[in-house]
Amino acid sequence: MGLRNTEPLTLFTARVESHLSMGHDIEGNQRPYFSRAAAKTWWTSQRVSQALNAHSDRSTADILTIQRDSPSFFSLLVYINKIPHLEREFHHHTLHLDNKYPISDCPSQWLGHTPIGGELYGAVRQYQWLFFPHSFHINKLADTDLEDECVLPIISMTKLRDGKVEGADIWLVNLDPEYNRLTVSRLVLHTCQVAAAC
Image (cartoon, rainbow, N blue to C red; front, side, top):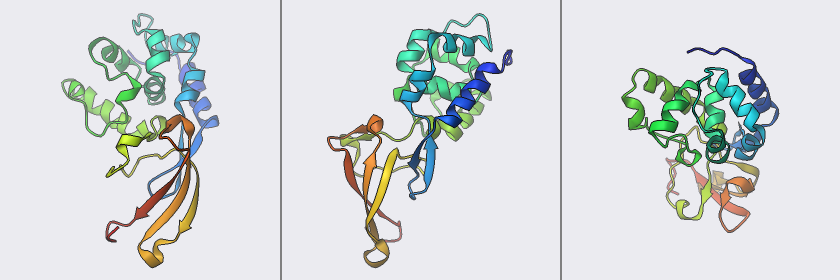
């Protein structure tokens, strides 16, 4: 079923645009993201219900689960206008949980629903970083390969050393506390070009 009421989508899109946080991509350019805290604040029971009912008056998705475990995933689906896919995720898979994102490959559960699965995957891949910036975890720092589209929730960056002379830039960065699972609030980031031997 198509979208019956555009108001929840329009209101949410305006909310996203007016409440973006600024992070950086892996090259240091500013990139926006909509934080999980902002999503949790926006998605009241009434707003979740309105967004679900914009597509179907028979939704069986659990509103409390959306609010508790899936506010960012729900935000992503509303933003890309893919709410009808939520029903299948809630009843057959666990891909509706925020801790499953961001994703690199198309989930096998979606592949059986081609072309719908491929279409959903393409839309999720295109917009996921807006709702799922990188989380910094102590056990995932070493040898982490970040995707080019990745949004790093870095509040500020100060260059301590220019890599033009020694091949690598050294940055002091302050992280958004919501995505910081480290024991420090600031860290030093070492960046280099692949051609340079860092």
